[in-house]
Image (cartoon, rainbow, N blue to C red):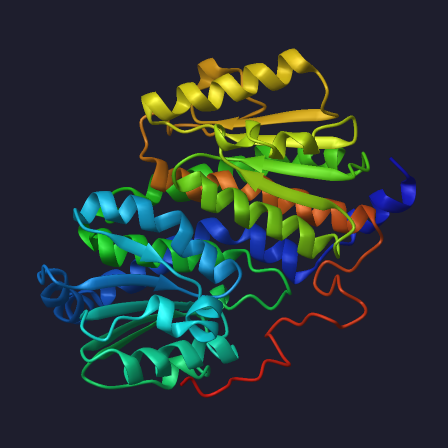
Length: 376
């Protein structure tokens, strides 16, 4: 590793690094905030969840949309009803395909800034097109457009200010908003006992994964693919985006499920490819995950393979301590940390500024250049 890179890492006081590192604390602080406001949150949410005809839609753009993709299958199972993940970018561009006037709808909006044009427009479209619409807004910015929304059919949860990531890439804002939705919709009391273990696991993996991802970040992989099943499909998508953002598009990234990967996407594998597999704790799902791990090892075509698991018997490269019996939803939080750290180290190795990796300014922390058109 070049001495110059070591010097850069020693001086790395970027918001990106701090916001990745602060996640054990921001997760605990998020749950504490929810407990403090539990009565008013549940007064809004509980009557809605009691309605058998209620449609629940999780929405956001980019990383905020991927929160919904992670949680929708899990919450559908917990609540015993369909929970849909639909990006604001889809709602705004094709509302006729996604909104149903006759279906009472709870739109759960995620927004770090809460001011993205599509986030605001999606709320307005739902109000305009759905006869009986409700909004649960989860945001990190008390000054954002969404945070200022207020009505008897809207409840706004503003997370601790530390979760309002200053860096370009969303890290602690992603995990905090995801925890908030999991807690509010899955039960604040139910999650309360699990948050200490989640936060401890995140702290442990922050320390455990650093040497490995630092080394991997200097190896110059041209391609990286993240694989995950169930809730981890959405997480794999978020991991792929994080690396694409932090490398300023220099690394080709992809994501898929363990079973879906063989159906064409496996062609991404060559000697310049890093493959990362998130292994589920579900007994059936993990068998498929471990099968693709065994196949990739047997093929020996990829440049490197990293396995992330909670089970110490898997011989994983990163083992999540103390969570062998944890729900997959709880593993979302420690599992994303190595991907965040890897993106940071690749960014540094490429000589980029992690807080502002896109020097050309073609992408921005809060999306710009979006025109919202009136829907027919």
